[in-house]
Length: 207
Image 1 (cartoon, rainbow, N blue to C red):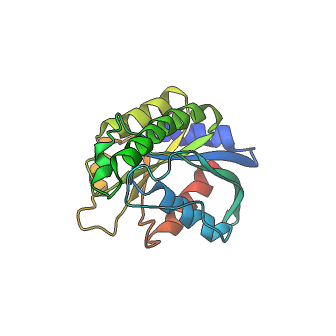
Image 2 (spheres, rainbow, N blue to C red):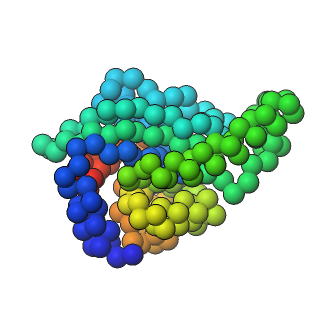
Image 3 (cartoon, rainbow, N blue to C red):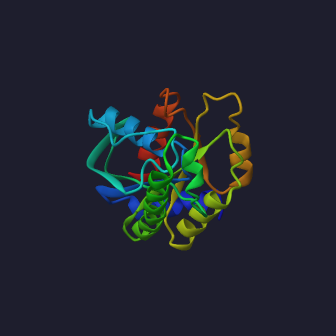
């Protein structure tokens, strides 16, 4: 899908809308909740949820309504949706190394699998998406391809967020090369680096 076509289509779709539902999608530990917390703190003064190094910390859709973003005279009101991490499989043994016992790990695994299903079902209620990618990892993962494939199939516009740019291995060039048809914004949600550029892109393309 050509870059110009995407944003022409976005402008036509959202040009007259006063409020949209914006979903944050991505693989586990890509930094979705950290980014959601950053946005909510900046515009609401309160966080979205708990971020953790343990995979699938977010196992149910978290929602903040009426997030009003104002940048350079542009205003956008959003229902912000922090989605569970998308993975092609969930193995309970992955949680054991974080100190969870077998029972807790199996329970978390079941909840994570249900969360993935819930996140995909919510595509029916999402107007646009921020796809959060860990810029220190290979972007061509099954999870990322599945997310973008589903968004494209449902004609849901997306902005790619190359997160964790504070890490030495971060490389947004790989993301741009893998997904050339999308707008890519580099940020560190943890440190807040370049976050204003993301806000400008959201308001410019979705308001």
